[in-house]
Length: 153
Image (cartoon, rainbow, N blue to C red; front, top):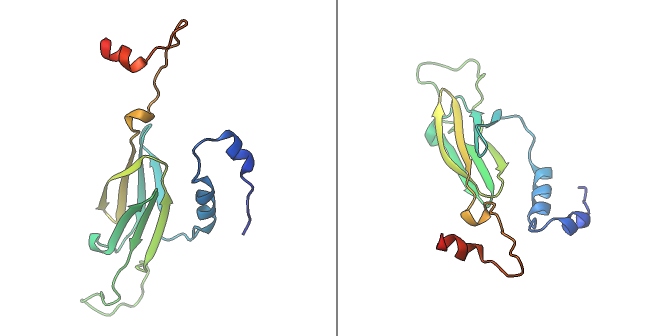
């Protein structure tokens, strides 16, 4: 495993304590191709992950978020065989899987739906009010409290 010296980055970045953890987690991510997925940007703060999960029902899939990590897993029981006859060839993969996605701060899952063998996961970034940019006025020789000024108006 390659170790990175992030000391120069910490000199100019404030509050990125999780950066080293994210880099080490990214190097451990399984790059397997199953199941295939797309990530779409639907606007400035909206995203969608679409995964091809043909053969899986809603009860076979789990979506969990924990500490900026979205985990999608699927498990199908081996006992589920076709009741109409003997299976001669299995081309539709139904093996268990687990996919992890690192989410940026303040990105939340807003819903998921299974449609035509595709799992759509809707994501939205919601910045708290105190994180949104605000203009700070510069007083002429005196200190201005912008919140008091806004309340007076």
